[in-house]
Amino acid sequence: MTVNTTERYGLRLMLLLAVFYMDNPNFPEPQSLSNISKSMNVSRQYIANIIAKLRDSGLVKPIRGKYGGYILARHPQNISFFGMMDSLGEKVSRFECVANSSTCSFSKKCPRRNYWEMIESDLEKALAKHTLFTAVKYFCASPQKSFSCKADNKMRKKTL
Image (cartoon, rainbow, N blue to C red):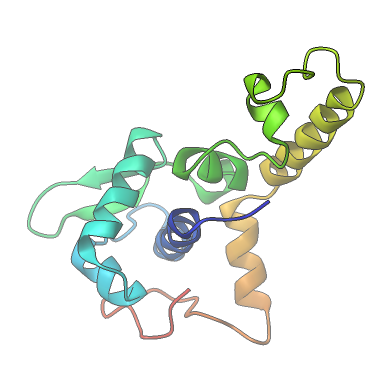
């Protein structure tokens, strides 16, 4: 499985929002496109495109107003990596014939296709069992912390 740039940035963005969510689950601090863009060192327009996909999938929600921005739409425990990957990019697939049977003239009769489908299913199950919550807990417990586990208004330079 190859994670494309949009998926990679989208996962980083979701991890960032999860830190703010977990810092105060009752009232997570909304993050503006500008803050997210600066923190991740990614263009505002690119972040806006990613946010649109995540919003359309029900993973983030907008908060309007002077101090508005985006927050997770639900608790990080209820957001799987499969759900995020599925909303950000193409269908997670290693085998083209499984994703699109019209790519191979033998796909309906192919004895290997059932096995490839089983592998695809196992991959989806593995991604579904890992959540945003477990990822943040893992990264925060790691001795090589790659980002701040405590949210702050300045969104420290150490980013995901």
